[in-house]
Image 1 (cartoon, rainbow, N blue to C red):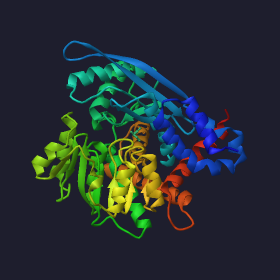
Image 2 (cartoon, protein in one colour):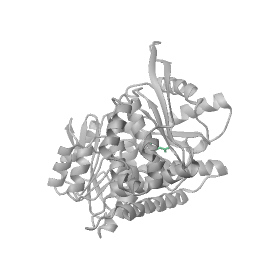
Image 3 (cartoon, rainbow, N blue to C red):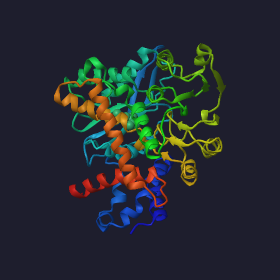
Image 4 (spheres, helix red, strand yellow):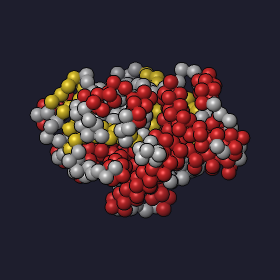
Length: 445
Ligand code: 2IT
C-alpha cells in the first residue's frame, strides 16, 4: 500500500530542485492513489515508482553562430518518459525557462494526455533554454540545424516523434526537418507540425485551440449551458491562443483578452474578426514577444505588466505557460463570477489555485485533457504519413472533435462526484493513468 506523503518525500529526494516535476507528479498521484491501492497488481508492480521515472533522458550541447560571428552555447534535451502505449511523442520547447525539471514535468503530463487521446502514443518532451526572442531568421536556422544534428541520434518515426511547443512553430519544425533529412536521407514523418506541402496535416496549427473549445463546449453541455454569448478571457497570443480565440468566436462566445510578457489587451469589441486573428499571427512572427501594438491598431486597452485574470468573465482559458494563474488570480476570477476555468497551457494553474477552484466547485478542466487536441492531430498526422496520403480539413476536424468528446466523456466517467460536481482533474488523471499502467503490466518489466 502506498502512503501519499511517504511516496512524495521519496520522489522529492530522488529529484531534487525539480519543483515543476514534483508539482505535476503530486497532482496525478493524489488523484490516482486510491485506484492504485485498491488494485494489488498495481501495488505489487511498484507502478508509482515506475511511472514517475523517465525511461531515459538525453542532455546535449548546442553550439551555433550568431549574426555577429560569435559562438553561442545552449543546452538541448530530450526526455523519453514512457513508451508503454506507443512511440514517445511530445513537443520541443525553446524558451529561457527550460530546464531538465520543466521538461520532465511536461513529459510526465504528456504520457497521460497522449493516453487520453486514445491514439497509440507514448510520452516525451524536449527542447532548449535557447531564447528565440529578437533572433534573426538566420540565427534561428543555425540553432535549429545544430540542435537537430544531435537530436537525430535519439529519434525516429517508430521510436520518438517530436513536434512544436512554445517557441517552436512551423518555421522551426521546417529547419529541423530539413536537417534531419539532410543527415538521414529519409522521408519519414519523424516530426509533426510539418508544413502543408511537405507532409503536414491540415488543422494541426489550429488543433490545440480548437480542441480546447470542443472540450469546453462539452463541459458546458454537461452543465446544461452553452458557449453562446459567454464572455471569455484568454492569455497568451501564440498558436494555442490563436486557435482558441477563433473557435470560441465560431461557437458564439466573445473573447475580450489576450496577453504577452508585456501585459494584456482588453478588447471590449471582441477579438472576433479574421483581421484581428491574422494580426495575432503577425505579432507572433515578429519575434518581439509583445502584444501592446494590438491596442494601438484596434483601439483596445493595454494594461502593462498585468495578467488578464482581473477582467470579469464567464470563462477563463490560460493559454500561455505553466503556473501562469495564481491563487490570487483564482480568487479574483471567482469573486468576479467566473463559471468555468479551462486550463489550456500545460499546468497553467498553480497547485493552490487548482485546489481553490475545486473547493469553490467551479468546473475546472486540467490541461492534459483540455489541450490534448494538439497532440491528437499530431497523431493523425503520423497516420496520414504512414498511409502516404492526406485527409481534408473536414476529415481531420471531425476526428479531432470526436476525440475531444471522448476525452470529456472519460473525465465524467472517472471524475463525477456524489454531489454531482465533476472533478475533471481526477477524471483525467485516472482515465489517463489506467491505460498506461495496464499496458505496463502487460509488457512486464
Ligand atoms: O503540449 C503538447 O501537447 C504539445 N506541445 C504538442 C505535442 C505534439 O506532439 O504535437
